[in-house]
Amino acid sequence: MKGKKDKGRPRKYQPELLIAMFRKAAALRNEMLAAGFTDNGGAIHSAERILNILGLSLNYPELNHINKLRHSERAIFSVEALQLHQSGNKVLIEHVSPLRHLTQTAIEKIGQEMSDAQFEAFVREHYLLVLLSPDETKRLNKQNRSKMNPDRLNHAGIRLAIR
Image 1 (cartoon, rainbow, N blue to C red):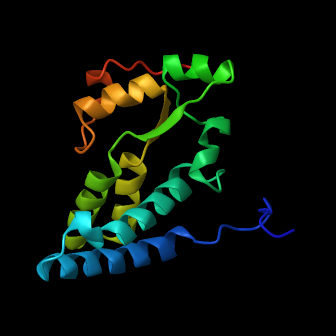
Image 2: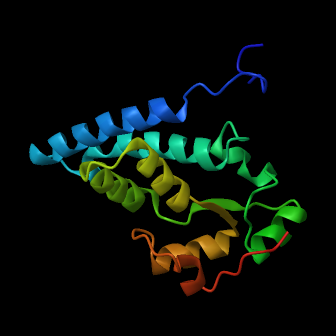
């Protein structure tokens, strides 16, 4: 059946390949910056996409797409988002470490000649998704939508649910 995923099939991209491709994307991004291009212009986009796929693969291996997070038993909800979800209302996916800054930091780590195993551990530690209410997402983004901060959710007054 075209378009349907067979849950028994292995993932299309394995972490080893994704890490190798991230290294290439990081090098290309750095070359583009050196040539005068910018991340906002697109220099970082391939690296961001690969890091997003890698993080999902490492930390949420049961998911074949980020939009399936709300159905995962391992999904982390805010208290408010869990109530909305349970009543059939909309919740939004948020990267705890904003993806752009996480990608920039990951590129710096790769530049420090981090091994593949060290890089994988870095991604596992910092790639985290949460489900928030639309209001919480707005509040979080007003406060800080561009810098990694381990207390980012706490500073926005967002409490996580225990399920």
